[in-house]
Amino acid sequence: MTDLEGIDLPNRARPEPLWHQTEQALRAMIVKGVWPEGTQMPNEEKLSKLLGVSRITVRHALRNVEEAGLLRREHGRGTFVRSSTVVAGVRGLTSFTEEMANLGLVVGSRVLELDREKATADVADALEIKKGDPVAKLRRLRAGNDLPIGIQTAYLPLARVPGFVDHGTEAPSLYEILRNRYGITPREATEVYRVGTVPSADAELLDLPAGSPAFIVERIASDARGPFEFTLSVMRGDRYEIRSKLHF
Image 1 (tube, rainbow, N blue to C red):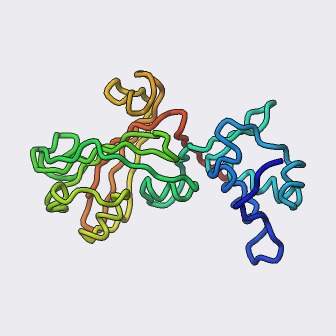
Image 2: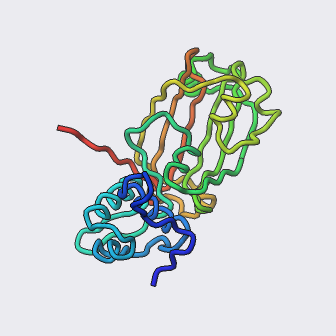
Image 3: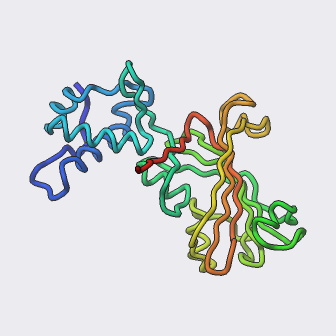
């Protein structure tokens, strides 16, 4: 029998819709390891009995959890847990930390490099500054539930963030630091995704062989004054997805 200790099961006496309660219960069981990564999920009938809700409610909740990237459906085989996958798609302007929280995953961040350097032509173009202008370079290993997901290298114009390198990064979210310390509030961002491979310099950190499939993501974020961040990310292809919903 599945161990449900500490899991809030759906309760009709609560004000939240049953499908939402069911979705939260499923997320909790995945995050807390009741169903570890790679586990095949029980079918809808068994989940219905386990959670005390209808199969329609279970189906609705499963669809939402799958769209969040915590499950993968394999035709002819069933549905399996993907507990450390970040799904990128149509969404609001969020940080990696906020994305992880939305998926119910515990964010991990390790600073690999924090230094000043002169902007290259590409960095300068992205940040709309002059080539050679000083920028802060922040390179971090990002993880979810203690599993590596990607390496992100952010460039910030030092004119916008004086003292950034000296003070360090006491919070896991770069955007939180920028808001609280410099009054920078993101307004919009442009992201470009390319299919690539894991560079040899990043392979050990990502716990993958060099040349493994990866998403290469370029992001330029702006506030009311213009671009303040250019980030280049290398994301594990097996733990990062891009999913879009199309309407006709």
